[in-house]
Image (cartoon, rainbow, N blue to C red; front, side, top):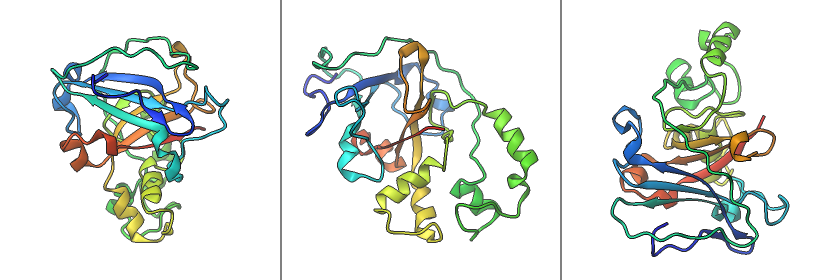
Length: 235
C-alpha cells in the first residue's frame, strides 16, 4: 500500500477486506476502452461481512455505506509499505490471474443501447426492436455465458444494468425510470472492474454474485479513484 495511506476502514464497522490488485503495467491498456494508467497498481477493498456476520451491507442506494468499498491507486515509483491484515479479518487465499482481451456487449436494457435503437422508450421494459427478441437474447447469452473477472468493457450485470443502479444512487433515488435524467446519468459511468465469486479464493458474494466498481471517465483520466462507485449483484 502507499506508505502514507492507512488501511481502509468503514467508520463504525471496521476495516475492509482486501479483494484484488491489478498491475496496470501488465495489462494491454491500448486494447481497453478505458484510460487506465500505463503503470502502477489498483487495490480493491470491500467490507465483506466477516466482522459482523453480514449484518451491515454496502449498498449503492445507502450513502452511509459507501465507505464500505474503496479503490486505492499506487502510482509507479510511489513509496510503499507492507500492511498486515487487520485483526478479525481472515485474508483470502492469493490466486494469480492472467489477463486476456475479449469482446463484451451491453444488454438491450442498457441505456446506451436503448437510446440507439429506441430513443425515448422507458427503462425497465422491452421495446420493439430485434435486439429484444428471444433469438438475439439467447445469442447474447451464449456470447457472455459467465460474469467472470473483468477490467473495462461492458459490465456483465446479473440483474438490472449496474450503470442504472449507480445513477439511481447518485441521484438519491429521486427520479423515476421514465425520467431522462436517469439515462443521462447512467451514461456518465464506465466499468472499472468486476470480480465474480471465486471458489479458488474462497470468495462468495451473496448467492454466487459479483462486485462492481464504476467510475466517471473524467475521474479516471485524473486518477481520482477514490470517486469510484460500488455496487454488487447476485442471481
